[in-house]
Length: 261
Length: 74
Image 1 (cartoon, chains in turn yellow, orange):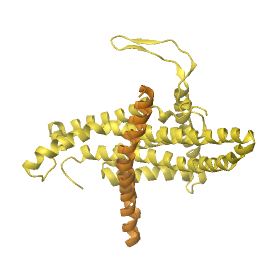
Image 2 (cartoon, helix red, strand yellow):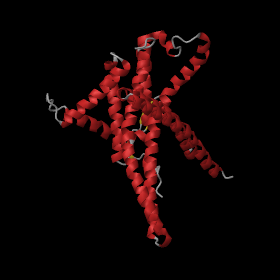
Image 3 (cartoon, helix red, strand yellow):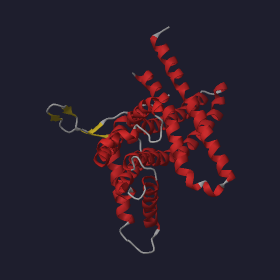
Image 4 (cartoon, helix red, strand yellow):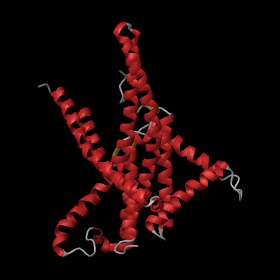
């Protein structure tokens, strides 16, 4: 059976000279298939919105409708979670959502999924958490400790609640990165394993005799691949949406610190 | 026992953590559907909360999956 992990290997397409940063080390600047997938995703989004907004008609056409619907969807999301200040963070959330969605969907059409690389998802998660920390400290200053000390909790419960809140805050970037990575990796491994069954059971059937029993099995796993592909399209959208929602929730924690709305 | 065999058994055992995530996501959606069938007009507004809960529950299952991969490939 074909190795299901083979699809996640990174290989260089154009080898560029190494780039040395003093004190940090040498960085390999090669243009890899991961870079290519991300470039295609970014170019796809830019191309789509250039096309969708080129007419700018009062009565939107089909393409403009899709662009406006996506815009509206995330605008509603940021406003409903963060409140009236949500629109300030809309560009970041919208970019995050579209970029992850484009990478996930391209992974289903091309051979390589950029979001199935931990380095990519960890960078996106680190970026989100850094933004949360910067906004939190700029807006609240020393009051940031209130994040770990919920209001209205009796003092003897705080001994228990504060460490739990602190640990869960530290785990946020880890789970944010691992959720997207694990979902995309798991889905694509399952797809390749089922696709591998089709080939190996077909080979068994080609041998004739009792091996012909492999044909119904191969048909079953082919149906499984089709069903899983449909599921993966749902997961691709859902994971991009979940990443955007969680970024909103984490931003809301520091933007509206201490007062509920 | 060979180290290689123990590695495979360990990776298989690590994925058992997904049982908890499965029960959690099942409970979550059953609760949502019960609420949604009783008051369908309020169901649409809770979609974001539903997905948020599912994502947070699922993260623990994903941790088990990643642990299994780490045992298998490191």
